[in-house]
Length: 181
Image 1 (cartoon, rainbow, N blue to C red):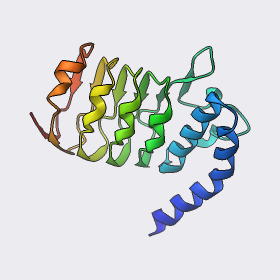
Image 2: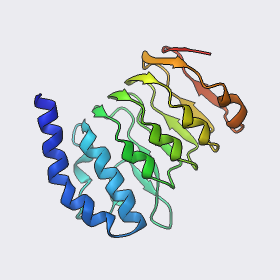
Image 3: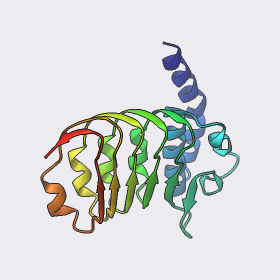
């Protein structure tokens, strides 16, 4: 109950900023997605303190942008993050790297990650994600590294299409989970 109240408070206090940034165009869309991520992934030993409307997302810790000011990397491994992974991360259309390994994130892996057509590295290992692997990760045809190992609570079947559609895949890490296939 207390966590739900805290999450609601964070969301409500961030909503005006999210709406303002969303009106700012493509980089505003990226900022809005990142602020939704911040609201859902709590903790982090102050790493997310720089994430506010006073500076653009390209100056935020753990965020790397292209020369066109689009977010291409969100990399916050081992930062003590907890909470859930916001589905809004799937709106980061230029994202190439998502590394949230070695944190305390939990819940389902959002199906919205399947919209990340340019993503090359997806590392969510060493968290406590649960549920099934999103089948639409096979739409991420640029994936080279898919590392979801040591979540222990991931279940279900590995999508058969994984090997057929992810032709650039160099590393697949699903160890220490309860997946089959």
